[in-house]
Length: 359
Ligand SMILES: *Cc1c(COP(=O)(O)O)cnc(C)c1O
Image (cartoon, rainbow, N blue to C red; front, side, top):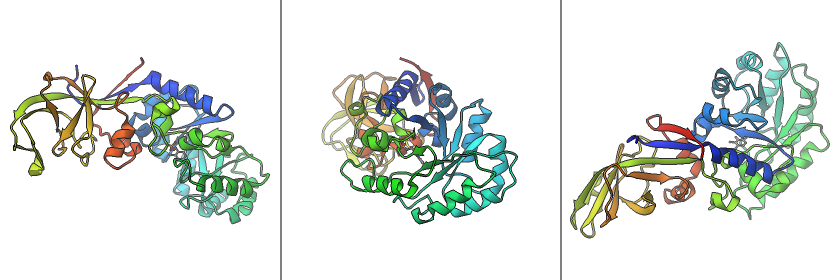
């Protein structure tokens, strides 16, 4: 067995989640979001599994080019479009699709001399105020793009939710209404829903859903758990015990001597740390799973090691320690460390070994 930290990727769970998304949004095509190394799960390996989705979404052109270089031929959408007009020839050559979200992109696109027209997803800012054209400018921009020889018709029309993870937040219904009012009867397929839209806002599904997190079997809802949506966690992040030792009441453990044993106990030292992407700010008490039982971490997480209080239990040298996975939701660990599961998944480092297997 590997003694290195391991991210085991359950390909059966990944395919299950695609089916679940299809069940939840039966009339929508799926644009699977693979940015940030497929949320830490491995860009190409995940893409190769997802044969039954309609398209992939990434944030940056280099992610798209990695997919093409890896033999992926499905449609790929650059979710932030091009950053500079000089990327357009590469976009045409690699058959990429672009989100257009800013008047400057519109100008650059209509002015460019392209070998062939490209697919455009025109993004409208319905209230997130990050990317997207102003509702008031929509008609003019839409017309301009309709008349451009560089744009395949009809375009697709999209927006993005800011608060869809909060079930009771009225902002989502407001965004949806403003989006629909803005586009009026403009032609084009619609795309609105991220994972939280898929799970929590059926009225937002439209022609294309854009799930990221849900694909990986993690709940996109605030305080949510994947089991509530019948999603299966894809990643099990684990390492192993490299030492077991006795400490006495009053012994301080780890950097800064921040934890002092309140009574005699035993510690397991685990080969996992922030150098692997385990969060350094995980507080004492954050659970890990050893032989199916939860134990609390104690002391500070260091670069390569973390200490766990195992009390009087017998734990073997080399025992597997699960940091998150099927029986220890990454959502729960994220709550412990006051972040979101997205960040924990993305932060896994190249030092971690990956293994892809089905059930
Ligand atoms: C990242 C992203 C998504 C996916 O979001 P999830 O919350 O992971 O489902 C969808 N749409 C756009 C535009 C994105 O940038």
